[in-house]
Length: 277
Image 1 (cartoon, rainbow, N blue to C red):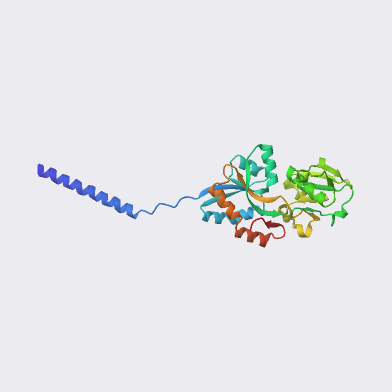
Image 2: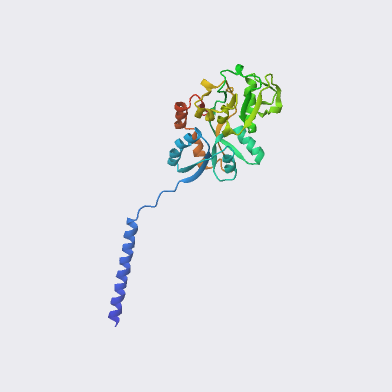
């Protein structure tokens, strides 16, 4: 009886030892743990060249451990609404005066993170070759948000088409027009409607992002252009609460990197100037 019990105990010891060896063998053969998953971010945008720039940046960011989803929206209000509501982590479509106007009206805390390019603002016409040809009562068209109204009126004033109250600058509205010798009419439309107004308006003020799809460039086709001291650099924007995050800072570095600079110089030299070294 005792011999039988001893034999059984020895057998159990061998079985347990064998299981342990198998377990160790299996663990030794198991693949190494997977690398850390990339951080996911969403960036809202609208049209080229913003979308194209983000397409260039996306694979570069993945090398930095950031997986960026590009969210293309359909109007110029949604990207800021989505960012303020934390539906996206950043946006890339606007200049700082537009962002500041949104903050003032919504109480949001959006901030500029990285200037990317200066878009040459101009006034275009299908009907006339020079501003001197604009007739009495001609229709001048501009975007209807406050920052672009002021921007357009300032450009018209610099071209001698109208005069504005002293000091209003880019805060100008139609109420600030003090002289309008040709009785021009002003029409304010949604930003995305500007290109369609080329048939109806006599002079349409717009950025190259909207002029370029029509085959127009500021150097060749604009009757008037904005000065070189523009405050309207297209900028990567985030929120106060995430602007210093590792992912947003990596995005800022890549979006102002040599690949983006080369792309702008080779594809948009006439309409978009890099705003970084």
